[in-house]
Image (cartoon, rainbow, N blue to C red; front, side):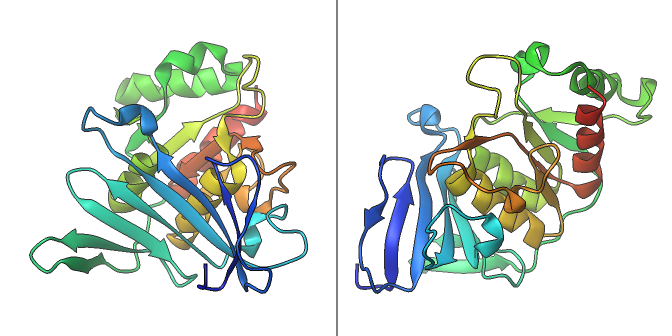
Length: 244
């Protein structure tokens, strides 16, 4: 309140919270991403995006986002952000009692060496995407002709932070299970901020077909599939889905 924010949309609240009708900005936030990792020392964090106030509120494509960021809570406290001028990362320095900028203008390589996905869901995927995964695991002995590393942190913020710093790609596609037809991540306050940051770093973020930032939300808590990271690999995954 009192900081120019008109209203807030949070994963932890069913309804939009109105703060200041005269506020200039709307804020969408996922305050705790990866909550299943609380208590075991695995990465978790928060995501947010900032949009100029408009009559349609949060029900507009993410191209309206003017700033986005995340905090990663792990062995260090890291804050990644973009104001539309690239992606920068600051780390909390306990000796200073403040954040110190450690990465400025991060850029993603177009090719991925590391891929993050939940392999236990693979059997529910479309056949084209299952074929992509088989080729990936075959490494240099398969049609891809090179080896890949696999990661799965079960926290989108952790994957985002790692990919921004080290490269790679992430996917949580839609699948055949009931309730997963449109993916499981929330479009407005999870996929939206991630897509804004990834595009600012030169990567791509799609639902398998359409850029995340071009999607029109059907509701405040609408779900989406999400593939993001190295632009070449995101394109390859998209082609695999279209071949399903």
